[in-house]
Image (cartoon, rainbow, N blue to C red):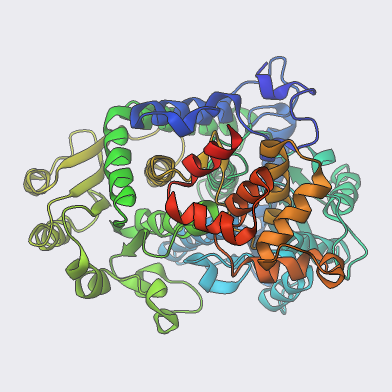
Length: 586
């Protein structure tokens, strides 16, 4: 049993919010140690059931539910008329819903089959590329988005993704499904035990996330609803569900949908053993990826050095791996309090390749300009050798185009790296030229899998590497204290509660005093008015999302007794936030 599985370990927190003992000192680790810690943490996703307090990915109940959902998907694939499969989530969950839907609709289109998948992300397509946290708190928006997507459909399989069983946006959609069982079959994917679902009142609603889960548990007995919620263990960085939560989401849903496609189009019977075999193929993918931990650590070091120098990290990708670059970059702002441009991603073909339902949204500003051409025209001229550029591609992509982009980048700066996937024995001559242009090339050679999709393996591997690069770089920049997101932005109710708990844990002060100090930092005052203390959390969040360094400000002012203004002055003198907070904690 892992230490975090003890019922006495941080008992007030759900698994997804606990701190992971494996990464307690990750803030002081070298790049190679950071990668090893992430490897050990990711390995917990694949732990087996023996003596486990919580359900695991491989336990019978989880696999049984996956099989049953795959059967429903198979039926819709065979009779798609007036039917739809909807994947929905907030933040990383919604972005992965988009990625998965895009991939499986593409496969259907290649078979001249009607597309049956749709995605919903809280905040719309803007949220694919930037943090849009506020819509997560709106269950009525979730319902209206679902109704719009499903208009006219007579049979809908709805898969709501909420890693912490907490997002009101998804809770609203599940509630709507439960009230319309003649059309909807709801599935909830998350990574906390059911009893740890969020039980806070949702404004203007009669339900909580927990009450929705409890209703689904009753219906699950008759297969009218499904709850798939193995525990994958606490995140390497506490609460950062973009990492293990995102990876497990991708694996679970791809296994279910691949099984359904194999049954519908190849007449292969889906069995318990087939599901296990597919999951183990992903486990092998993680092992193959981390076998290159020295090379991954080199990328972490390069990216960290750039961020410490107030320079940039840019991902230039092709195909679905580029989408994973876009996803990884978009997560840095809310997770680490990063500035736009610290880590930025671009995709060959821009919005035409992304193929999102709203089309190009580049008119919204530089944050939404994602084509390689826009990088070459607007970003590359501003870079120098202190910035880091990483190419991300496979040997099925246009290698000549990769080489041309590499040449263009090297004309301006030298700190160019590459992540490349190929099958064993598949080596293009042009790759040698790319290797010469790059400071380092992380090349993965894969055998064709006996179970699952090679493309999915490439994607998971790339996700693990990019998560390590962006997380490790921000650790080296001082944005993590022990294994906590010390500069997390307070942009929705979940993050407000996370910030309050973190302040309490680090300061040792009572919860009420910590929340009072947090509000002072949010409103930038030294004395709270009665109006401020009477505002709901939603109002605090609206103000908080306009603020920076809210948690560090709170901790410094709370521990020193100084004013908010003096705390900000101190932080301005010590830009490495971990060191600033550490000075007062000592």
